[in-house]
Image 1: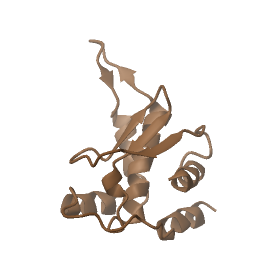
Image 2: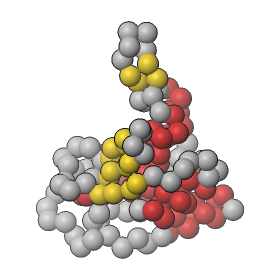
Image 3: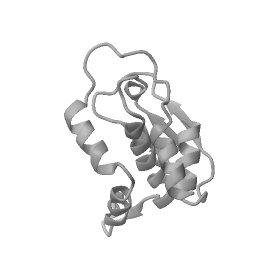
Image 4: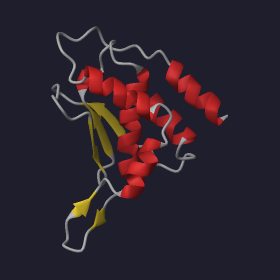
Length: 135
């Protein structure tokens, strides 16, 4: 996961994000793909994504989403509620390469059913694509 963070940080955020703790959840979550604790700088991904059936593009897209939380933080509305997914956040999320394909794949394949396929071995195809795209 650290390689995903490094490549996305370089390609999308121009290395402006300080490193954070990246980890897998202990249990499979049915709906949630990832969580970001902005104050502690911890990104936790659903361990169900650590499955050979899940393309790198999906993992990269989820990590990018969580990194956007680090980048934008949260805003408070007039009534004091916190807003994490602002219009600016959603716009930035949609320009990520592979965003539309990731949303389509998740819509067709999530939640993952059955026993997990062995642990993922990164193909690096999508990461190499990001690296080439940004020089």
